[in-house]
Every structure is written in structure tokens, then in C-alpha cells.
Image 1 (cartoon, one colour):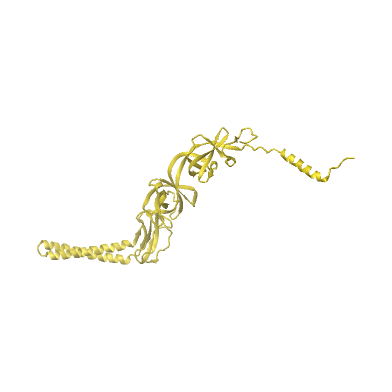
Image 2 (image 1 turned 90 degrees about the horizontal axis):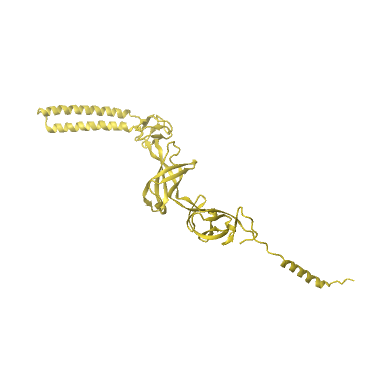
Length: 349
């Protein structure tokens, strides 16, 4: 007959068996991380100053009626080109022409009388006072004639420079009051681009520097120009300074009033660079992992600006040193790593 163990002994034996099995279980070895590396290379960096500017015409003027009068002719088409001195509009000049004719007749008569008195004075039949009085009358008559001519000239509106005119808002026959806008003439052969920068960035900007501007109307077409003028006065309210650049505009793509994003290319230089993903942050300090004989060594670096996915390195590395660019999140200082093409390792550093 088989003996049966008491139930009170079975539970301890099971517990001992499970404990023995747990003690025999070994910890799984940690895999050696796979990383990618690349040598530290020299790249071109530029300190960019970004701003937003407004496009202005090279020259622009609103031609207005100098007096209240009726328009007799308009000599421009909507958006058309006009030459310098071309007649834009003509106001009624009937009354002024009559006044000119009267003034010219008076001037002619006064001049003829002056010539007779001069002849009499030469023969001793006229006094000096009489000659002076008639000279004054002749000069006054000529001045009245000149005034009448000027009045007619004011009613003939001409383009002060070559350019393109705005859309028409008045018609021939309309009576306009003094100051009413008749046309706007704009010279847009080149564009003045005005923008402001903080005074803290003033040291990065100087006259003659190249700029690049992009408009929402032409997002894939940058416009290149140069800084022409820097305002000598800083705005005390905004602590900003106004800068004016000149952009060539041969095809009239840019229009006055456009908003453009400006980028000033300043302080171009050659510096060491690493990819942004290669950097590891620890507070305000930055580190990279330097590869030395399959060992990742954590090295502190000094950084500059970020540009096109690269970070400028101003100290801590030398050209040609290999750094880890992929897999840095898995690394600690002194860890053994493997590269693509290496045989898999069983244990980690």
C-alpha cells in the first residue's frame, strides 16, 4: 500500500519547487544598439535677418484738379503707359483764353507807348518820370499776360514722369472740384521695399547688402535686391529702425502695396556642422556622441545657429571626427555600438 503525504506538506513542497525554477532563470542579454555615423564636415552658414516689408513704387503721384472746372478731355487708357510730359487731362480754358487775349493786347499797347516815350525822351520832349511810369505800366501788362498763360497751363494736367496710370474714375464733361483725383501715375520699373528691424540687429545690416524677398502672390519666385538706405533715426516707441531696399521689377510682377517677407543674408562664413538629430540636450548644454573604436563617447559641444537641418558647431569637435547621427536616444557614455554591416553582437557594453 502506497503512503500518502499529508496535505499540509504538499503546499510547502510546491513553493520550494517554484522558487527553484525561478532561481535557475537567467537575465536576457541586452542587444548592442545599431547606429549610423558620419564625419563632421564644414558647411556654409549665414546669419539671416527676417522681416516683413511693404512694396512702394519708385515714384508715384496722384494728379488732381487744381481748380473747380469741367473736364474737356482725358488722354489716357485704364492702366496704360504714359510718357513724361504727356497730357493726361484738359480742363475748360475758354474764359482763361479770353483773359489771355485781353492781357496780351494790353501788353502790346503798353509796349508800343513805351517805345514812343523812349523816342521822345531821346529828343528831349519827355521827362524821366514819364518814361519810368510807362515802363512800369508795360511790365505790369506783361505780368498779367504771363498770369493768364499760367492759368491756362494749370488746366492742362501732364505726367511729371513716365509710368503707368491707374483706372479711370472720372469722365469727360464732369465738373471736378479743386483737389479731386483724376489719375495716379506710378513708376514701377523698380520697387522700393520698406521694412523695419529691431535695433538689436542693426549691427548685421549695412547699405549695399543683398536681400531676398518673397510675395504671397509669387511664393515660388524670390526677388533679389540690395539695401539702399538705412534710416538714421530709431523709432523710440518700437525700438526699431526703418530700412529701404531696391528691387528690380522689369516685368511689373511686383505691385505697390504688396506685403513681402524679407530675408537679409548677413555674415556668411564656413563652420563645422552636425545634423540636428545628432545633438543631445542636458539643461542648457549640448552634447554629441563621438565614435571611437565602436564606443560612443559623450562630448560637450558649443553650438551656433541652426540652418537647413544643420547646427553650427563653434567648439568641441574637429573636422573628420565621426559622430552618431541616428540612434542617439539609445546611447549612454561609453556604450559599445555596432554599425550597419557589422556582425550582430550578443551582449552590450
